Length: 225
Image 1: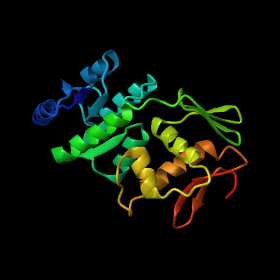
Image 2: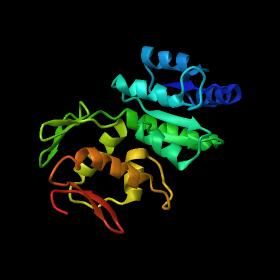
Image 3: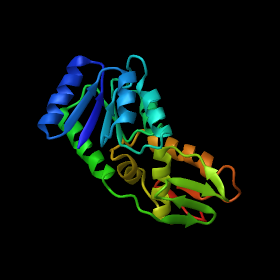
Image 4: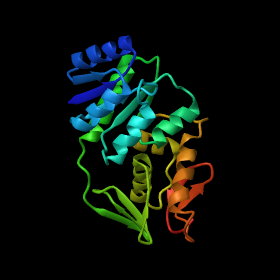
Protein backbone atom coordinates (compact mmCIF):
# COMPACT_ATOMS: atom_id res chain seq x y z
CA UNK A 1 0.00 0.00 0.00
CA UNK A 2 1.34 3.43 -1.01
CA UNK A 3 0.64 6.47 1.14
CA UNK A 4 1.35 10.09 0.24
CA UNK A 5 2.13 12.36 3.21
CA UNK A 6 1.94 16.11 2.53
CA UNK A 7 3.35 17.82 5.63
CA UNK A 8 5.60 20.88 5.89
CA UNK A 9 6.66 20.40 9.53
CA UNK A 10 9.86 18.39 9.15
CA UNK A 11 9.71 16.62 12.51
CA UNK A 12 6.11 15.48 12.00
CA UNK A 13 6.73 14.49 8.38
CA UNK A 14 9.81 12.44 9.25
CA UNK A 15 8.00 10.89 12.23
CA UNK A 16 5.06 9.82 10.06
CA UNK A 17 7.31 8.46 7.32
CA UNK A 18 9.36 6.39 9.76
CA UNK A 19 6.37 5.07 11.71
CA UNK A 20 4.27 4.17 8.67
CA UNK A 21 7.21 2.51 6.91
CA UNK A 22 7.82 0.42 10.03
CA UNK A 23 4.14 -0.56 9.82
CA UNK A 24 4.77 -1.92 6.32
CA UNK A 25 3.60 0.91 4.06
CA UNK A 26 5.46 2.62 1.21
CA UNK A 27 5.61 6.35 1.95
CA UNK A 28 6.19 9.36 -0.28
CA UNK A 29 6.74 12.59 1.67
CA UNK A 30 6.16 16.07 0.19
CA UNK A 31 6.96 19.17 2.25
CA UNK A 32 4.88 21.80 0.45
CA UNK A 33 1.44 21.99 -1.13
CA UNK A 34 2.43 22.39 -4.77
CA UNK A 35 4.79 19.42 -4.80
CA UNK A 36 2.21 17.38 -2.92
CA UNK A 37 -0.55 18.18 -5.40
CA UNK A 38 1.58 17.29 -8.44
CA UNK A 39 2.62 14.06 -6.75
CA UNK A 40 -1.01 13.23 -5.91
CA UNK A 41 -2.24 13.58 -9.49
CA UNK A 42 0.76 12.06 -11.27
CA UNK A 43 1.28 8.89 -9.22
CA UNK A 44 -0.94 6.17 -7.77
CA UNK A 45 -1.55 6.19 -4.03
CA UNK A 46 -3.93 4.26 -1.80
CA UNK A 47 -4.23 7.06 0.79
CA UNK A 48 -3.23 10.71 1.23
CA UNK A 49 -2.43 12.21 4.64
CA UNK A 50 -2.76 15.96 4.21
CA UNK A 51 -1.91 18.97 6.36
CA UNK A 52 -4.08 22.09 5.96
CA UNK A 53 -1.62 24.95 6.46
CA UNK A 54 0.97 24.36 3.73
CA UNK A 55 3.30 26.60 1.70
CA UNK A 56 2.35 27.32 -1.95
CA UNK A 57 -1.05 25.60 -1.85
CA UNK A 58 -3.11 24.81 1.25
CA UNK A 59 -4.79 21.51 2.05
CA UNK A 60 -8.32 22.72 1.21
CA UNK A 61 -7.15 23.69 -2.29
CA UNK A 62 -5.32 20.41 -2.82
CA UNK A 63 -8.34 18.34 -1.82
CA UNK A 64 -10.68 20.39 -4.00
CA UNK A 65 -8.46 19.86 -7.05
CA UNK A 66 -8.11 16.13 -6.33
CA UNK A 67 -11.89 15.71 -6.14
CA UNK A 68 -12.40 17.77 -9.31
CA UNK A 69 -10.29 15.15 -11.05
CA UNK A 70 -12.96 12.61 -9.99
CA UNK A 71 -10.52 10.85 -7.70
CA UNK A 72 -12.08 8.94 -4.82
CA UNK A 73 -8.76 8.21 -3.12
CA UNK A 74 -9.19 8.33 0.68
CA UNK A 75 -7.85 11.55 2.21
CA UNK A 76 -7.13 12.17 5.89
CA UNK A 77 -6.60 15.71 7.14
CA UNK A 78 -3.91 15.91 9.83
CA UNK A 79 -3.89 19.44 11.21
CA UNK A 80 -3.66 21.70 14.21
CA UNK A 81 -6.90 23.44 13.14
CA UNK A 82 -9.20 21.99 15.78
CA UNK A 83 -12.38 24.10 15.69
CA UNK A 84 -15.72 22.46 14.93
CA UNK A 85 -16.09 24.68 11.87
CA UNK A 86 -12.74 23.47 10.52
CA UNK A 87 -13.73 19.84 11.06
CA UNK A 88 -17.06 20.34 9.29
CA UNK A 89 -15.39 22.15 6.39
CA UNK A 90 -12.81 19.41 6.06
CA UNK A 91 -15.28 16.55 6.02
CA UNK A 92 -17.80 18.35 3.83
CA UNK A 93 -15.10 19.27 1.30
CA UNK A 94 -14.52 15.59 0.63
CA UNK A 95 -12.07 14.42 3.29
CA UNK A 96 -12.63 10.94 4.68
CA UNK A 97 -11.18 11.60 8.11
CA UNK A 98 -9.92 14.52 10.22
CA UNK A 99 -7.29 14.04 12.94
CA UNK A 100 -6.14 16.94 15.10
CA UNK A 101 -2.53 17.52 16.17
CA UNK A 102 -1.09 16.55 18.56
CA UNK A 103 -2.09 12.94 17.97
CA UNK A 104 -1.24 9.46 19.19
CA UNK A 105 0.45 7.45 16.47
CA UNK A 106 -1.54 4.34 17.46
CA UNK A 107 -4.78 6.20 16.73
CA UNK A 108 -3.48 7.50 13.40
CA UNK A 109 -2.39 4.01 12.40
CA UNK A 110 -5.80 2.56 13.28
CA UNK A 111 -7.52 5.21 11.16
CA UNK A 112 -5.10 4.58 8.29
CA UNK A 113 -5.95 0.88 8.33
CA UNK A 114 -9.68 1.63 8.35
CA UNK A 115 -9.43 4.02 5.40
CA UNK A 116 -7.30 1.58 3.42
CA UNK A 117 -9.76 -1.25 4.03
CA UNK A 118 -12.60 0.91 2.81
CA UNK A 119 -10.62 2.09 -0.19
CA UNK A 120 -9.99 -1.45 -1.39
CA UNK A 121 -13.67 -2.37 -1.44
CA UNK A 122 -14.98 -2.68 -4.96
CA UNK A 123 -17.66 -0.23 -5.98
CA UNK A 124 -21.02 -1.84 -6.45
CA UNK A 125 -22.13 -1.47 -10.07
CA UNK A 126 -25.83 -0.96 -9.45
CA UNK A 127 -28.48 1.74 -9.60
CA UNK A 128 -30.42 2.71 -6.48
CA UNK A 129 -33.72 4.55 -6.73
CA UNK A 130 -36.30 6.07 -4.39
CA UNK A 131 -39.17 7.81 -6.14
CA UNK A 132 -37.47 10.15 -8.69
CA UNK A 133 -34.12 10.02 -6.89
CA UNK A 134 -31.55 7.81 -8.63
CA UNK A 135 -27.99 6.92 -7.60
CA UNK A 136 -25.43 5.36 -9.93
CA UNK A 137 -23.09 3.76 -7.41
CA UNK A 138 -20.34 2.81 -9.85
CA UNK A 139 -20.12 6.30 -11.36
CA UNK A 140 -21.02 8.05 -8.08
CA UNK A 141 -23.66 10.17 -9.76
CA UNK A 142 -27.01 11.25 -8.38
CA UNK A 143 -30.06 12.75 -10.05
CA UNK A 144 -33.63 13.65 -9.21
CA UNK A 145 -36.36 14.15 -11.78
CA UNK A 146 -33.55 13.62 -14.31
CA UNK A 147 -31.70 16.67 -12.98
CA UNK A 148 -28.09 16.07 -11.94
CA UNK A 149 -27.35 16.65 -8.26
CA UNK A 150 -23.93 18.18 -7.65
CA UNK A 151 -22.80 16.39 -4.51
CA UNK A 152 -19.46 16.27 -2.75
CA UNK A 153 -17.88 12.87 -2.21
CA UNK A 154 -19.05 12.84 1.40
CA UNK A 155 -22.58 13.97 0.51
CA UNK A 156 -22.89 11.14 -1.99
CA UNK A 157 -21.76 8.61 0.64
CA UNK A 158 -24.28 10.01 3.12
CA UNK A 159 -27.09 9.88 0.56
CA UNK A 160 -26.15 6.34 -0.45
CA UNK A 161 -26.33 5.25 3.20
CA UNK A 162 -29.79 6.78 3.62
CA UNK A 163 -31.07 5.22 0.37
CA UNK A 164 -29.72 1.76 1.21
CA UNK A 165 -31.56 1.99 4.54
CA UNK A 166 -34.76 3.45 3.09
CA UNK A 167 -37.46 3.73 5.74
CA UNK A 168 -35.08 2.98 8.61
CA UNK A 169 -34.28 5.55 11.27
CA UNK A 170 -30.51 6.04 11.38
CA UNK A 171 -28.99 7.52 14.52
CA UNK A 172 -26.36 10.23 14.34
CA UNK A 173 -23.79 7.85 15.85
CA UNK A 174 -24.52 5.22 13.18
CA UNK A 175 -24.24 7.78 10.37
CA UNK A 176 -20.94 9.06 11.77
CA UNK A 177 -19.46 5.57 12.01
CA UNK A 178 -20.61 4.50 8.54
CA UNK A 179 -19.86 7.62 6.51
CA UNK A 180 -16.83 9.05 8.29
CA UNK A 181 -15.49 6.05 10.26
CA UNK A 182 -15.38 8.41 13.21
CA UNK A 183 -17.01 8.76 16.59
CA UNK A 184 -18.54 12.22 17.06
CA UNK A 185 -19.29 13.71 20.46
CA UNK A 186 -23.02 13.81 21.11
CA UNK A 187 -22.90 17.54 21.74
CA UNK A 188 -21.59 18.43 18.28
CA UNK A 189 -23.81 19.18 15.30
CA UNK A 190 -21.58 17.84 12.52
CA UNK A 191 -24.16 15.30 11.35
CA UNK A 192 -27.00 17.84 11.50
CA UNK A 193 -25.02 20.27 9.36
CA UNK A 194 -24.21 17.53 6.84
CA UNK A 195 -27.89 16.54 6.60
CA UNK A 196 -28.96 20.17 6.20
CA UNK A 197 -26.53 20.67 3.31
CA UNK A 198 -27.66 17.44 1.69
CA UNK A 199 -31.32 18.45 2.01
CA UNK A 200 -30.58 21.73 0.26
CA UNK A 201 -29.58 19.78 -2.83
CA UNK A 202 -31.82 16.70 -2.67
CA UNK A 203 -35.07 18.07 -1.23
CA UNK A 204 -35.34 21.87 -1.31
CA UNK A 205 -35.83 22.24 -5.10
CA UNK A 206 -38.55 19.56 -5.17
CA UNK A 207 -42.12 19.30 -3.88
CA UNK A 208 -41.79 15.84 -2.30
CA UNK A 209 -39.36 15.71 0.62
CA UNK A 210 -37.42 12.49 1.08
CA UNK A 211 -35.09 13.18 4.03
CA UNK A 212 -36.97 13.31 7.33
CA UNK A 213 -35.95 14.12 10.89
CA UNK A 214 -37.19 11.70 13.54
CA UNK A 215 -37.08 13.81 16.67
CA UNK A 216 -34.88 12.42 19.41
CA UNK A 217 -33.70 9.53 17.24
CA UNK A 218 -32.07 10.55 13.97
CA UNK A 219 -32.89 10.67 10.26
CA UNK A 220 -34.51 8.54 7.61
CA UNK A 221 -35.06 8.70 3.86
CA UNK A 222 -38.48 7.68 2.60
CA UNK A 223 -41.39 8.87 0.49
CA UNK A 224 -43.44 9.24 3.67
CA UNK A 225 -42.51 11.09 6.86
